[in-house]
Image 1 (cartoon, rainbow, N blue to C red):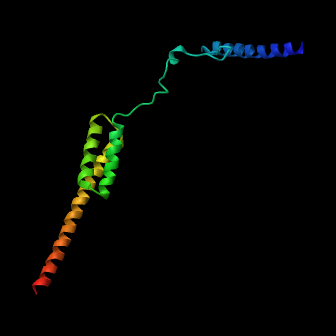
Image 2: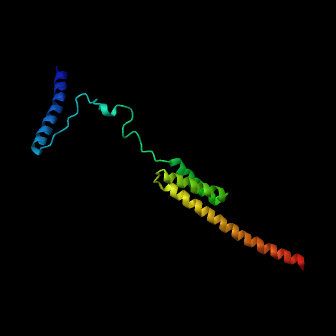
Length: 142
C-alpha cells in the first residue's frame, strides 16, 4: 500500500509541474511544450536516413585545394618548375569549382613564390658559376 502511495505521489508530481507551467504560460501568453510521457518521441521527418545535422557541408574541390597547397610547399624544396606549375593549376581549378577556402589561394601563392625563388636561385647560381669559370679560365691562360 505504501508503494502505491509513493507511485501516486511521483506520478502526481509531474502533473503539478505541468499545471504550474501552463498557469504561468497562460499569464504570460505563451504556449508551453510538454513532452510525451513515454519520452520516446521520434519526429518522423528526421527518421529517414541522414538529417541536416548529420550531413556535413562538403567543400567543392577540397582535394584539389589540398594538392595545390602541398605542391606549392614542395615547390620551395625541389622541382619548382614542375610542382610550382602544378600547384598553380590545381589551385586555379579548385577556385573555379567554387572552393572558398584559403588552401587553394595559399597553394597558388606558394607555387608562384616557389617558381620565383628557384628562378632567382638559378640566376644567382649562374652568376657565381660564370664568375668562377672566368677566373678558372684566366688562371689557365696565364
